[in-house]
Image 1 (tube, rainbow, N blue to C red):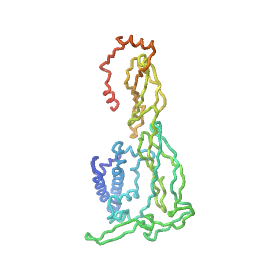
Image 2: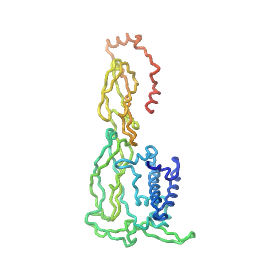
Image 3: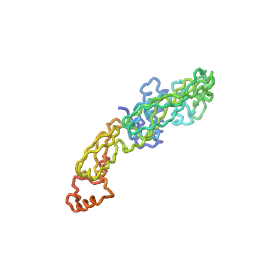
Image 4: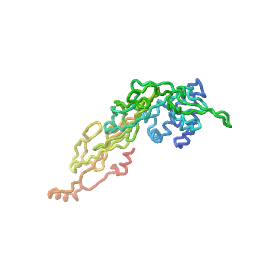
Length: 372
């Protein structure tokens, strides 16, 4: 089982953003690879802390994690979080350690073993609309995305300013001793390479815009506003950089008859007075198609019929919700003479006098059952 993000950083679930940031800074310094050369356990802890911070420092991701746990970041496209590489982690340090470290490196430790920092291409964002049926079962969507790619025939050369490292370092004397700071190379923008041959139609970085069909696997149970991440399908970076990500915002199309509430679905079933008295069967909608349900004779308006497992598949893999059918007896507003005379005769008839049984639940009890 995957370790809890709050436990990794050593903070409580109610920790503030400042406390989370402080805890991550402490862990990053403690387990940084340059302070623990050859220590694979320290490097693993370093990656875990970075992954935990990436989620808990983002209000949207944190809210999803608090609600769904690690399941919120699983599935074909994922929601971010897992699978971070050293480039992703390295990019966090400008925010965590501030300008004292040049905003681009881990000052004093010389980056990750002195290796080159690979530039990451920019992310792209799209919206995908899903029907309730697609949400319930999960779906694979193919979308066309216009993304930047390296132009055919483009070549790069080592940046003469940073000699391919992507960074420039500066050593200054302070009252605390000599301090080394690192900053992104202004000449190459951190890529470590500058363009050597630019084909016709390419931009200053040697990139061209190309349309590509991207397949997105959407797991069942996603909700409106959730964001999935397709790694490596954003814009490419120049030189030997890595591609950005494609961020997919989920939108849901309102269903004609079914209403979603968490993993449960609600359906309003209207029946006639005669159907309520005599009973029978009615066809209703579900996300899996139409089904026929039985109505007992004498069914009361407000009765809730529960169809177990006919709701939405849980995003955390805990089965499916239920379909709650709300029975509403439709009272006619206009009657002909014969019908009116019939009901007038029935006003004092014993069978038409309300006689609620103790087993009949009140409205508030029914509401309570819906949320239990």
